[in-house]
Image (cartoon, rainbow, N blue to C red):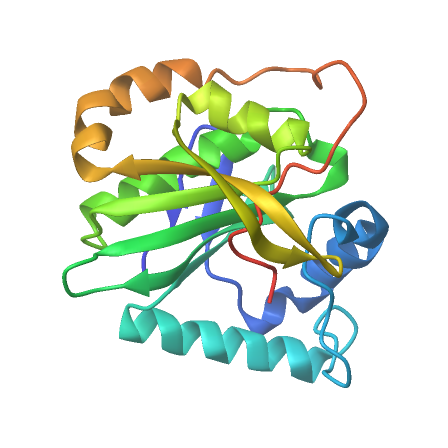
Length: 216
């Protein structure tokens, strides 16, 4: 799978050689991200501290790409790894739909990088992966992630109650949908909404991540 590029980002699948960079960011941001992610399974090796577990994660995702059931993208900004955007739970047949999830390094939150990367991933989903619909799921209390959806003008499909287990609790999520028809009609408008900014947005930082795809 070829790499995707935006004005400020390079997007590509993670490989075993990325372990040190990925692990450093995941460990440094562990407390910041934990309240927005499913709890790690007990007795399962931690890929952020064990190279073999990370290598297994990479192999699983490579197989998913080959089967067309998921597509993963690590994010690099100015040559440094900074997060992930992943297309997961791809349903083919009559559905042709998937979930899109993301997270970003705490140090780069609020700079519009996720919105910029999402545009590239949406383009891949609709124009190369052949999907008809994608969904982004966000907890109502995750203000920073909701700003990403607002910036892109994503269409809300309402609240799913007790939708995903996050940090041990079943959390409600707002579901945002985008279809291929909407993408072709609005992609230029959406691109115009995503203007790189040189400084972090004001206010208290919150983890910019959705919940529909954990870091697995």
